[in-house]
Image (cartoon, rainbow, N blue to C red; front, side):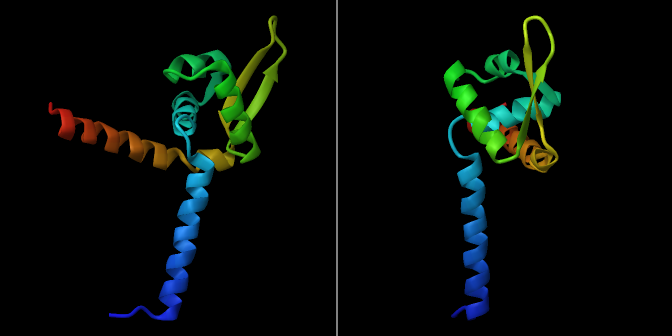
Length: 117
């Protein structure tokens, strides 16, 4: 059964959209960083560093900058002693909350299925 050209075009656009999403969210750390901020609404740099096992200061800084560039995370410098930097999801970043929740649910079920219990 052959697809109509319109269906092929639609499929190509959908595949491009998936690739665009993966380009923004790909890598070992981004989804975990977003998840940390999403769960607590606002997070300090050191809190995210503690939440995300294995990430270095330098890598967290790099990933947060990329998330800022993609308008998913907002960085706020608080006037405290010492200076505190706080991160929160932007309105655009909050649109990922459902995806993060679905990934969490899937991960819990997957772990049960693979490990048992």
